[in-house]
Length: 356
Image (cartoon, rainbow, N blue to C red):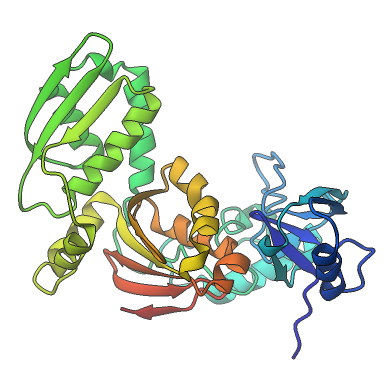
């Protein structure tokens, strides 16, 4: 069956084709043959329409399935680079239609997941599924084993809130060691605090047997440096010089169990993203907001291959799926090395998964 592209993806946003174009080909021809930048008016397709309701969740969906009835007015779209346009087949539903399809999928797919609570006849029972289950049955948050996995991103932001509220800036080196252990379960062999009055630097020495401690400490340091506007920094004494060598060592047969246990302990994984090398600039630009908001921490980059510490694996996979029109066109895949073993995902709306 031929799938007709009735929408397009441009600069991390989805839009329906403008009405004046009968099909995607004529739209693309007009852009390629026109003068750039070109302004068009198209209806935006959003996963979150920003509807605030504390009891019934509305206005949320997962691409390429969207909702009408919230922001249906065309908006201005300025096309600056025609090479950044990607075709999409989108399906648009009313809230009631979407709810019915989602309910049917949940009843079919979700039993067996430890996060699943049986649905009631009330629409409120669908809350929480709109951002996790797509209408093609893809869920990247399924949990089938206990206990519930820790999420490093959650601990990071909780730590940051307490740091600012209770003035961790004034704590001693030993007190900060206790806080880091409390919030992140990390243990260090030694700590030294350098204080210039307006800036403090916590110098940490780790235990050699800890595989993830160097990259984990750097992630905490990046976050703390950001929220304190560079007033507080952390330096780990054992700096990694070769990420590829470190990863090979971490996931080797010798260390596989220890590495998985540490990923479980800290709530992280290592992601290795691979794609066509000529797409590096586009992909890095698209992923930058995830790094800026501490969902993923860049470790090392080469042409067509990037290493990340993932602070919330399921959320990162969901965000990569959102970018499928672009990422799939550059044959993107990600290897996940974490507490559930080593897996590879082909980035598409299907998110096909295989063992590494």
